[in-house]
Each structure stands twice: as structure tokens, then as C-alpha cells.
Image (cartoon, rainbow, N blue to C red; front, side, top):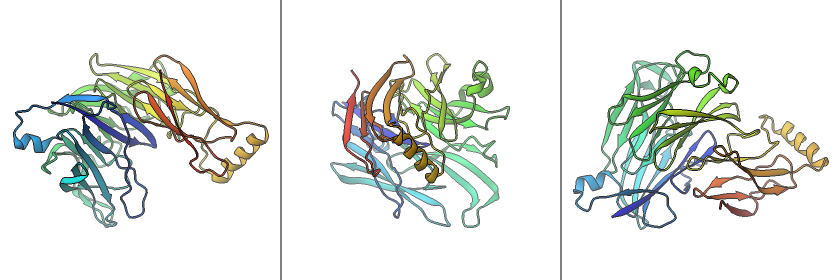
Length: 364
């Protein structure tokens, strides 16, 4: 029985495609928090495929999603206590199973990852959430929960600072073979991108950032994870300076080699990246200062000079750059989002800043 799965994820403001489409729900006491869903389906629009055995035991079927299952989660901010995420497994719109898992922060940009055979999350132990104090037994752990609700710890890190602790951000490969982590920050000798075997939690590949960028030291900066290609072969990450993306990293897990791609000019954290194709959206001339009044002033000056905003798709692998749309309004954002490996959704900017007309672009 063939199953096809979708996953979407949000990281650092960038919409990342992992296997097909993006689902959102709004779930946290008035806070607008994007929440990924994971879908098992037989529709042909999906990308990543896997095979389920017809002789699976009941226990095995409970651990993984079955055909037609949808997994999603709702975040709860518990104020001065540990936050939580409720995992739902649904079929035909009805809840088959649900369970709650503790998480350190419901406002983290990547609190939970849903995959075919489980939900993954970083947990914090030995921490006084009310008084914001680390206790003597402080540690972070990476946990996996099967869809029957059973959880187990995969890894522990007792380091007490973010510069040393590797269990901050993570991404699980779609095959659930690897987990990628980051260590330390720019300027520190142990700054690295780390890919571990998820079964053994031993390092399969370690890329010291200074070595990785020895031929491009000007591109070395803070490190963020983009995600995996839908077949689990390629991992993508990026370096960034504030809101500006500086470069992209692609790791081939079959060869163990990494490539560096300078980012096109003016790619910001909100641009949409597609790890299956290497396509990234680009708004040339756009910027973000953090000062709304200053941004409005620049926009007004540019529009007075007849400047507008263009939306491009730039392919990192080939260098091909395609004009998708033009707006007469300066320094605008088209709200791009990849719906599949070849379909980009975007919205035409309006003078008053509303969402505008929805459009789609399809790559040949």
C-alpha cells in the first residue's frame, strides 16, 4: 500500500517546503502561531512517498500514520509554567487519537516537528519556569513521541549556555534517518553544523563552519536551518545577518559533501525557499530596518521616483532568475509560499497593505 506524505515547517520567518504543501492553524490564545500539519494521503499532488506493510501489527500501526491520517498540533502558552503542545491524529476530519507533550516555549519558531512515525520536540528539564532560573540538574533533551502517545528521550545535553548546548534548533529528515543540529556561534572555534544518525545519535557528519567557509569567509555569519529535500538526501541551511540571508549550504548525505551558494542580493528571512529545487524568492531592492517610520519614508521616496517592486525566483543550482510579478508599489512583499516543488503562491501588493489578489506561478 503506497502512502504519500506532506509536511510544512516554519523557520526564522521563512516558509520551507518539506514534501509538498503548507497547512496552518491558529491555536494559541489570540496569538498568531503557524502550526504545521502532517498528512498521509493517496492524492497525486503530494511528493514524498513511502510504503507501509499490509502485515503491520496494531502496535506498529499506532506508532506511525496510516493512509489518510492527518497529524497536527495545537500550542498552549501556560504563562509562568512549562508550555505544551497537543498532538492530534485525525482521519476524515475525526480525531482518532490525541495526547499532550511538554515543550519549553510555545512561541519558539520551531517547537515541534511532525514526521511519518512520530512527533519530535526539544524538552527542558531542571528549569524553574516561573522564576526563569536554571537548577542544578538543568539539561535539554530531544524527545520522540509515536502517534500512540508513547515518548522516549533520544539525546541529552547538559550544557548550560546556548553557545555550548546543541539541543536548541533541529530538523528531522523525512526518512527519519538523520537529525541536524547546530553548535556554538560565529567567532567560536567549535561553531559547526552537525548531522547525527537518529537511531544511534552518533555524529555522521560534522562541518566546522570556519573550515566550510574557508574560501568564502565574507559569507560566514549566524547559522539557521532551512530543511531537507523530500527524499531526505539533501539538507539545506543558511547563514544570515539580522534579516538578510547571506548564503545557503547544501549537504549531500550520500557523498558527505557540502556546497556553499552565495544568496542573491536582498533575500530576506521572509522569502520562500524550496529545498527540492533550490529555488528562492527574491524582492530586489527590498530591505528591513526595524523602524516602521523609516521604512515608510523610504517607500514614499521610491514611489515618488516611479519605483515599484519585483518578485523573482532565483535558482541557486543553475543561477536562472525568473521574473514572476511586478507591483507599482515600492518595497512591498508578495507573501510567497511554495505549494509544491513547482507551484508558488503569492499575493499582489495593494496600496493600503492588504493581502491583495492571490496568484500562482508554475515552473515548467
